Every structure is written in C-alpha cells, then in structure tokens.
Length: 369
Image (cartoon, rainbow, N blue to C red; front, top):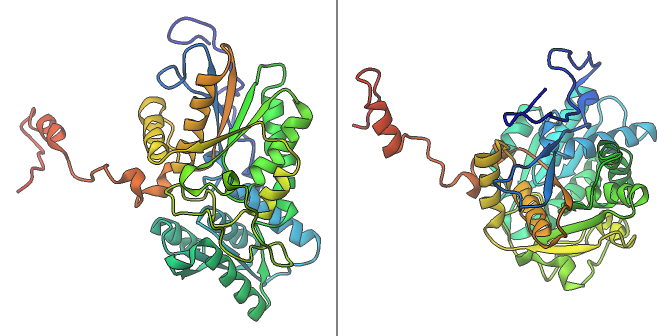
C-alpha cells in the first residue's frame, strides 16, 4: 500500500475485511488500543509524535482497563459474589467503566460524582443501570470519595478504591505498558507523555516502559493552576490510603478526570519509583484549544485531558533533539464533553456561512424565521 505522496506505507493494521474475531463478552475488547501518528500540521518539524488512542476501548476511555482490573481482582479474592453492589467515586470515566462491568457481570452499581462534572457522564452511567449520587461542588472530589466510603460502610457494599488499589497500576503494567513496548519494538521511542487522575497509567505503564526501555524519558503533566506535585506538599492519609483532607495547592481546573484535590496513593507510590524524567505544568486554555486542533487537523476526537497531554507532547517535541519520537496518551473521547468548555463555541444551529451555502440551491432550505 502507498500513501498519497507515493511512499510505501508502513502499518501494523490487519487487512481490512479480515475481521477481529469473535469475543465472549464486551470486556474481552478492552486494551490493545491503536497508536496513531500526528501529522505535520501539529507536530514540530524534525520530530515525530504518536498518540495512543484509549478511546478505542469499548466505553471510550482508558478507565475501562481500571474497572476490569479492580473487578477481576476482587472476584479472584472472593470479595464479590452475584448480586453484590459495587460503589465508586468518579469524575465520570471510571464510573462509566465500572457500570459497564457491573452490567456485564450482573452486579448492582452505585456511583458518587461531584456536581461540576459533565451531565452526559451521569446519563451514560444511568443508561448502564447505575445509580448516581451527586455530591456538592464545594466538597470537591475528596467529598465524593468520602461519600462513597460512607455508603460502602453503611450498606456493606464493595468499594473499588481506584485511587489506592494496587490492582490499578498493576493492570497498566501488564497491559498498557506492554502494548507500548510491543508496538515500538525495533522502533525509536524517546519520550512517553501522560497526565494523571489516579496515577495508574503513569505508575504502571511508566514502570513497564522504564524496565523495558530505560532510555525512554517519562514526562508527567498536571494543570499549572492545581500544582499538587509541583508544591512538594504530601497528602495526609487515612489508614486505607484514602485522602484525609483536601490538598492546599488545589484549585478548580477544566481538565476533567485529571488531578483531584489530593495526591492519590497510586500516584504517590509511582513517584517513589523515580521514573519521572520531566514535569510539565499545563497553562489555562491550552488543553481545550489543543483538543479542538486535534479534531480539526487530525480527525482525532479526544477530550480535554487528551488535549492537555498532546500540548505537553508538542512542548516536549519543541525542546527535544531533532529526530526525537514522542508518544502521548489520549485518555478518552471528545463526545464525553458536549456540555463542557470544549464544545462551548460549537453551535447547534447553522451559522452565517452555512446559511449562505444552503441558499446556493433553491430547495430544502431551513432558514431562521
């Protein structure tokens, strides 16, 4: 096969029409997400950037991996039995993934979610059969975590502990990290860029990458306006590793799913491995604008967190030696942000330019009254 410029195309894609096989259930489709090259309309000259598109998971985010890891770990330990209720605190993607697993396995599901997160996430979880308990904005993400713990204790429900459980990062070490190593086997890879929500991807995939390719530099990003890691101040913890209080450096930021108002234990434990080589704060506004640019120049529809990670990857590329290869994680789909600032400037009605186009032929015109 050749590209439009006539060059031979090198691709890992199976021939279209060959199929992917038959799966026993939806959870078997989790993982093995594709790596896609970013074209020169966004990639700095002389460098190469790739994106690992986690929205190819069945419920369109990297958190599908987390949910599968936690549920399978609990089942293997005898902590879950048919008819049990699973509960978790989430900004949305984990809750959607847990609701998917609960629906497939036959468990009941309750999700606690802070008020500011997009309403479409609540609807998706309820569509999957979950009950969604919304907590006040003023209590931040630590409030929804505390609410989930209260409800779990009172009702005897299974609490996922996504921010504390080792099952989180170990699954990324076994899957995400190995996928990256296999996809780049025999190929150059100089930098791997990610943000953090729980820290599971950074901890687990970062550990695997560093063990398999010690020369690859791990780049970690967080919102500049919520510089928890940048502050150097630790999070006080309860006995189970959950946060005892909100972090003093936290401030509200637009990157849903990233950087809660505490440093997760999974992230803290990953930082102790000293696998981070570079740290990039994300300025206000660039996550949204970069996500929009990915849609308009690459045809890649990712969320605000994906835009933030890609901005960090582009900045890394600008400062990297010529010929460097960078891989960025894109955690989820842009469709999860329809009610957020990502789509604030996207109109539902026709604009003036579109109205002029429809007027160029005489029929089937829907014009404003």
